[in-house]
Amino acid sequence: MPVDLQNPLSFKNATGDADTMLQNLQANILKGHVREHLHILLLQFGQGAEGTAEARAFLTGLAPLVKSAKAHLQEVKAFKENGPNDASDVPYVGVGLTFAGYGRLELADRAPSDEAFKRGMQDDATRQKLGDPEVAQWEAGFQEAIHAVVLVGGAEAGSVTTKLQEVEGLLTGSIRVLGREEGRGMHNANHDGIEHFGYVDGRSQPLFLTEDLEEERRRTDGISVWNPAQPLERVLVADPAAPDPATDFGSYFVLRKLEQNVRAFRQAEEALADALKLENDDRERAGAMLVGRFKDGTPLTLQATPGAHGPVMNNFTYDSDKDAHKCPYQAHIRKTNPRGSGGFGQPPEAERRHLMARRGQTYGERTEGDLPETGVGLLFMAFNSDLNKQFEFTQHTWANNPGFPQPEKQDDPDPGLDQVIGQGDRPPATWPKVWGGEEGQEVPAMAQAVTMKGGEYFFMPSLPFLRGL
Ligand code: HEM
Image (cartoon, rainbow, N blue to C red; front, side, top):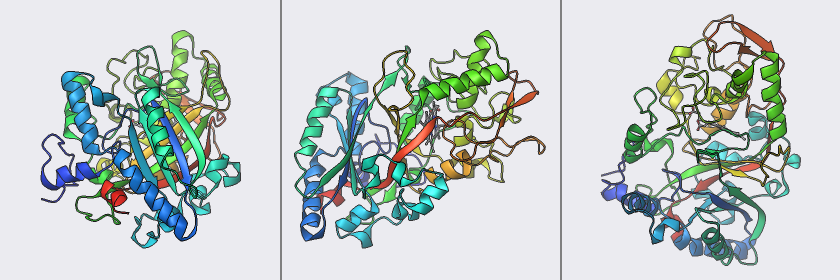
């Protein structure tokens, strides 16, 4: 039976083509793999016949190290049933190719066909669409022609470093390492993963496995109001260069290095609290209005104060907050997932198809209490089946678009840019003075605190493709 791409999948009950698909798919796509310690290598293959041969040999040599989705899911199952075991600490290795990378492999004619993937992130049309800085302003490694990316991630620094060395041992003379990135998980006192501005991250995700949906139903506030289920087709793409596209799948992978100016963001939180004359505990609401959740993850549309962090709530929409008197339209999570309230004639089901599987990790060292302006941020990573409809749509048509979402009352002012990731001219925005109150106040825009330092689009191919090169 062909793989059912129209629904989520039960990996425990997968048989036939669906089981083969899991064996042939890279891990970290359908379900995030632990990447507390993460290394990223940006690679360029050499020219000519020798470059092609060495690139192919590198990828076939890498194939046995690349973890399959099936191996990963079995490890997770064993861990849940019996606790830590020998496999719990086996790092994940993942690999992706750019369109230019397929060219160096002499496979451009069989490369995945997504238009944005073919353009790449350095392309002027892509940069203009996304509002990204000139390539000359990006970090050095990202300015070059990138052909491949390798990710090595896991729970423990030691085993991840050993695995990275194994990968590096496969590199031969014509393959250049253009850049290296290192990610490291950050946590709050509640052990939740956070990003550099201090907010719980990675909470709201599309879920592709029925086992993950069941867990969400049992262990969180549920899925009755916001159902995170998504069909496999939202993330899987038949691998056109693999032996059997009916069982061999891959996914488009977005990588963006996003520097966070922590001092600027803190100043913006304070400035907004001052402008609205928020006092005492209510001052925390300023930051929550920028993000859409309090630092501990409590959704602002549900509560005026933090405290709902065990488990972090995700079972909500903006239905009871249509006028955005609780969570402003311009808050990051409302801009990037309006949960059916965006307007512009898009019914909730159509809106859901823009969501993507986020797999980001924080980077950069800091000491407690400091407020770095540079050198720290988010290695934004996400899997998509359609870059134009998912990542690019979210950044361009939602985050960077001052007119989105459509305010409930026609005369209400435009929301303005996404307060975290919006790129472009920043018009002033209007904010509720009191949580749930009607009175809004216009405040001059805060400075942009997130700066794109480079990135690229990749395709993470199937294992049979890598083995067969
Ligand atoms: C959610 C921070 C970049 C899309 C979140 C959350 C935080 C956050 C704190 C709330 C946790 C959660 O709901 O999972 C950041 C920071 C970024 C960044 C600090 C940059 C430095 C991006 C980018 C995109 C994006 C580039 C896409 C273009 C999303 C989406 C959600 C989210 C879709 C989930 C919204 C929901 O389903 O309610 N982000 N983010 N983020 N972010 Fe970001």
